[in-house]
Image (cartoon, rainbow, N blue to C red; front, side):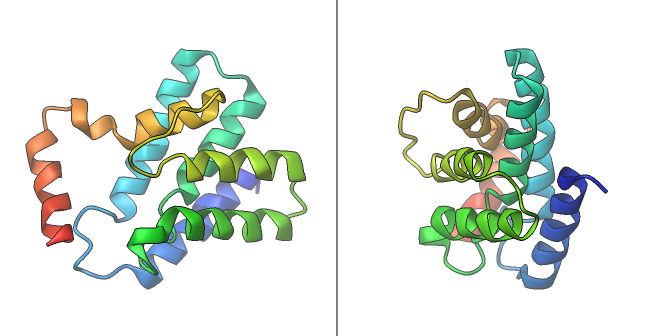
Length: 145
């Protein structure tokens, strides 16, 4: 099993075991959609294979801390990614890039010189450009009230 499949399995299990019904937007479906859009945008942007791997890993982990503390979930999510990747003996330089991308999903988005950060932010906000925007936004509003 490669690192992306291992991350997908880990994150899926984590979300399924910690998700609560009050989280109508931040759920496994949202994470899977961000991964899907990250792949699409990353390929269209011309990311290298290494950048794509970093992007997809960051997309899987980007909201894993949400159920612990939504206000600080980016930091917690980055810590989850770091712990998982260190246990897999993943290269530190790549871990740094992945955690940096996750931290850049914090709103409001801060400018970033790394393409992976920008693509992940675009993928995370992709729903704003879909025909389901209102329906999806209602889920987020429900979650925040």
